[in-house]
Length: 65
Image 1 (spheres, helix red, strand yellow):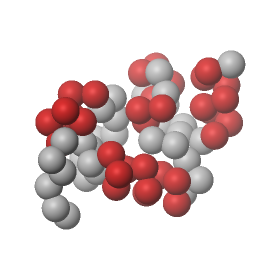
Image 2 (cartoon, rainbow, N blue to C red):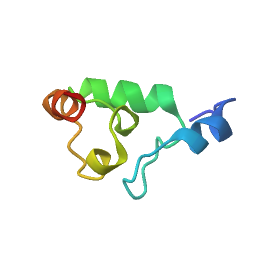
Image 3 (cartoon, rainbow, N blue to C red):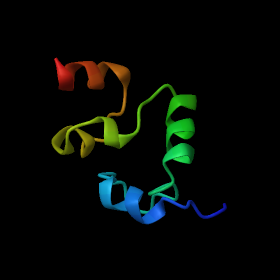
Image 4 (cartoon, rainbow, N blue to C red):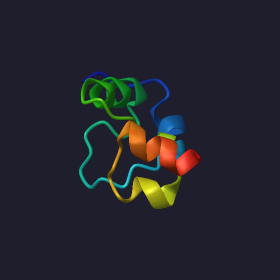
């Protein structure tokens, strides 16, 4: 995977707590991967919800309702 020119900026904003995530700081790869699984990436959720690893659209709606 090629390095992202925004890697350090992305890493500072990434709240993904999944250990060993290979897409951390690679936002476009992360987004495409999650959307392909009908999910949203962790950065779309508050930290407390992100830590549950429930990245479903339903969890997103519930978190922000």
